[in-house]
Length: 195
Image 1 (cartoon, one colour):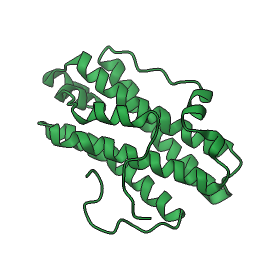
Image 2 (spheres, rainbow, N blue to C red):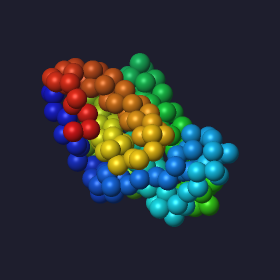
Image 3 (cartoon, one colour):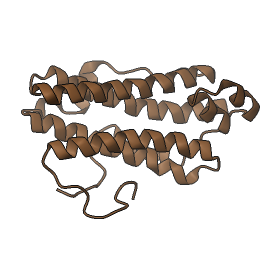
Image 4 (cartoon, rainbow, N blue to C red):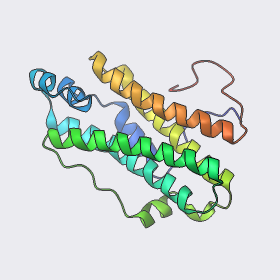
């Protein structure tokens, strides 16, 4: 299947649309990159930046919980389970960087929902096989790739584009491996992501 359309996740479409027109201040990007001294010099729009970062954080919470659903389902075989746990760790690192940046901006990170809320919104009851779990993860990874890529054109600061690009690269990497594990073909053409 070469289809690269945005997945239908109950949480993702609205958040992707919100990210699409968003631009973080240079100071927020410096904080996200761990460059606190440069952040002070660049300045921030703390309220706007916190809102944008919280949308991204919501995507990361969803991904972490989707991988937890998969890991706890008993449906994943050992090598696949190891990869799922590794990808979940990547999303936890994304989450931690976003949380730290939101706090440095003086904001409050959006709270993670209860596991049962994610199970319901991700339709965990439909997961009947390893392929079902991988398909869910691949759809979420692809959606996150598109979301992070969608904000890059609006950046006036190269650092903003770089951070978003790095997050998108992780998501695309995850999607590619999951898609391959499902036996699906690679995209048929170049420039398939972010379109």
